[in-house]
Amino acid sequence: MTETIRRVRDGWGSVDESLHTAADRLINSFAGAAVAGINLGFGFFFVLATARQSVSTSPAMTALAGLLSLSILLSGFMLAWGDDV
Image 1 (cartoon, one colour):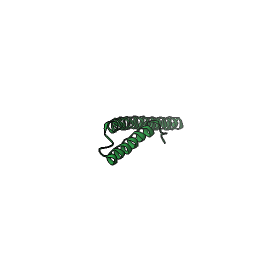
Image 2: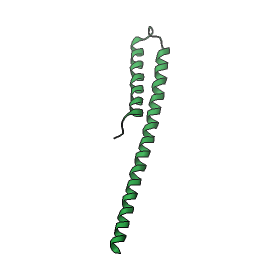
Image 3: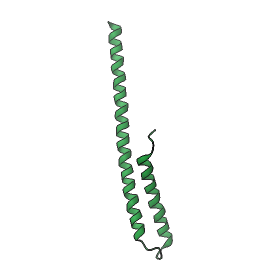
Image 4: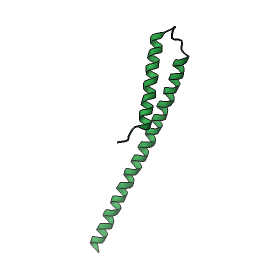
């Protein structure tokens, strides 16, 4: 009888640990999706803002803004479609 109670208690401990791990992964994936969405939004905003800027006025600043927007956009895509480890 005591052995049965011990097995049931150990089984519930394993289930509780599995549920905790699943909840952590779900929260992490939602947080990752939120960060990816923010990065994609900022990236698209900077791409549009850079496209409106005149290259003849300040080519260096336009190039810098373009690189910044592309890096933010790329990080958003990597976060959105990257593999979770």
